[in-house]
Length: 486
Ligand code: NAD
Ligand code: 6OD
Image (cartoon, rainbow, N blue to C red):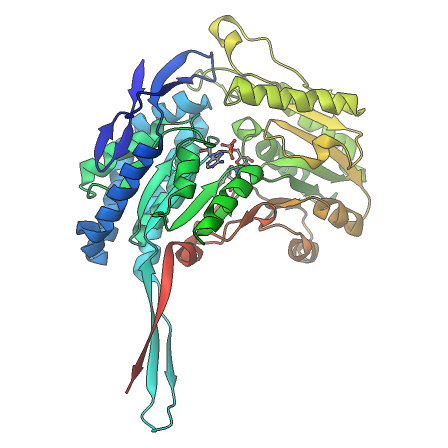
């Protein structure tokens, strides 16, 4: 069994309180590691180290050197690829191909892409007239914001944490990271990478622990943290925003979603079914961009439902590296209780359960894991709890529609607005609907096709702000204007 410590000022350290908690495997509930639980003392130490690094070598480092060090971080992650993949598989229990082909490579890419963005970003300048006729020039410079609190979730832990740490460091900030208590491993491993490539102590700090009354809340309340970037539930975002308000600190929020998938009869149906299958069930439905509400034009409704049902019934459960496995467990028993309570609620509200709705029969040690079946419902009104609330499990409700106007209203009638997928061969319709959907990210005939230069974030209660490409610079830097009288 492993021991997982904090990473503060370039060193792995224990909690002064002696408090620890267990990290259990989602696959079979075995204890995998004892994790140190950070308190106020660890958060204070991490923030002090981060502030010291800003005043020290990191703060004075030429930008070119800083950016080349981040390329070295990416290269070292790639060199230790197998370690990162193994750690992420242990933490999440998700299939090897998802972690090895999507989540870990993205972790490395997040350092390179933002280093390149910072290298190439232009600044603005304005010439102005003055009464004496000599004029003046204004130009703006970008400065790091300071110490950034990074609070990240468990569903794609390495990708989502580095999606924030990469740009924060590229812009010259330092970070105090609080990974999810469910997934402490890859953030810790990244500390080893930082030391291996010579990132100065204090630039990257990790404090483990929980949210309320633990490391998470202490970070959000710390008066020496300059800004907070958070990915997680909308309800948690509310708590963090209240804490950040105390110090008038900036926040960037990537929050929950209840995303719609819209399938028109003129689409390439097989592609749409495959796309909706991936978007609803990949990572066992634990993807913020996942589709939990599917609207299918009536002429293809029956065929769509029947084929998606068959896809769900063909999934192979098992350990990440077992041959053919494409379906992992939920992250924890606690999360499974939540998902299963939604499965019950759907039945109570009168859903037709097309497939799933329960727990699969697992053999041996796996019987102790947090498994659930992929589940499809039809027949519910839009007011049903499982059609309104984010479940964050492998499930979706499918409803037929008849007109473009009708489906637009249905898709927009939700408090969330993170992403939507539209499946159609009619380009005019794609543009028309695409610009009327109330969501930050709209995919046409695809899903999770990510260009890291594009703005990423949610509308309505799915978030505040946009990250990605130059948009990340808006959050991770502060613009200063310098006016020079000629
Ligand atoms: P969560 O909100 O429960 O926890 C996220 C992180 O916040 C964890 O590290 C947790 O310890 C910490 N935390 C909890 N309460 C806190 C508090 N009061 N103060 C400070 N920190 C606190 O979310 P989760 O269950 O880990 O992740 C699932 C959620 O994340 C879903 O709602 C999902 O939609 C959302 N998510 C959104 C995006 C996006 O890009 N919009 C991406 C991934 C996940
Ligand atoms: O790809 C990304 O950058 C990103 N933020 C993905 C979010 C996935 C949510 O589960």
